[in-house]
Image (cartoon, rainbow, N blue to C red; front, side, top):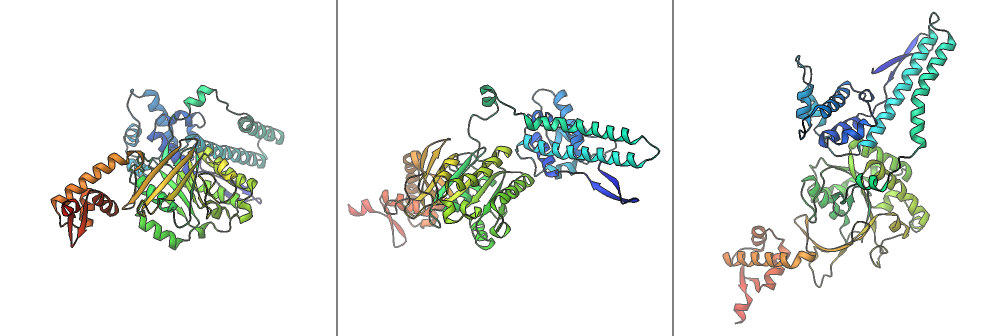
Length: 472
């Protein structure tokens, strides 16, 4: 049943469209096809008829049948599902199904989306009951008025009691249920700024530390399904809410090589300016649901909130500003990264950021990005400090060709390997340029120059000279 026509003003009729959230319905089916175990979560909330599209009803029903009948170890995916649903007359459009779901095979919070679909379905049930009651009441040759009323009330009670019951009780968890229902290891989308189920706060000096560059290079690695800072990324969609207008944001995106990524959705300043923060967060959450985003970056937090200097230092204001972010990631199983500028005279991690320390207390982990001492390191080196519930760490990272690399504890071994490769390349071709050596050793030009010098080689008149041999 798709639309009903309800009489208005005597003889006229008005078409009522069924309430629906197609993106949520596709997100549920896509997540199940990606991870078949998600079906159990969805089927505990939904029935096939709760989907608004006939094809989606059939797909959900067929998945349930396949799970019941399937041979152990056989995965249900788009191919096996369309084969199972195929009918002799060829009316099943397998190519059409593949086209619809090609961008929706993304891990998502199935329970949250299922509740959205169930709510839409319940509204449609209520509309159907009212519609039927109106038509019966207008039929003077039909049932008497009391019977029509009693029938409608009974039908309404059947769909409202269950809904009211869900709102009045909590689904509590035993310690074992809590352990079994959550992953043992943190689910990094982009290490360390986006982690499913956590709010991270990234501090750094404006226009100096490189917070936006860190995020965009991480998003590029995620889009390419590559590790970032030595950790695996999760290829999914990320919503990026920026304080920047389109033109400066375009420069950053182009520099990072993100122009063609289908996994990042930007919201520049002109699209959200002037909207109160609470309302803005409702729109952000709605957009995250529509776009099936698993991560959200707010760069920078206070500017996007629209906070004044006084509000930044107000503990109550800061706690209230973070609350809708925490609620969103809990409902959608997302990761959130909030960026904050540091003070001109920063202190230690956790206390160096602008505003009240209540913001630090309201998040799950703090990440601090600072430049290394220019006397000891080139300008493309950064120190990355991490403090919070997940881990405590301090890394030295280097930006090379729009890709950050970790030094830290593994630096001595990595340094020896890089130095050996650089020396070998120089000896093989003493006339090679700095760019050539960087290319053949897959190392940054700054690193080549530094390690070559430490190994006793410098450039002179277009050639590499062994200084130790020269001095002897």
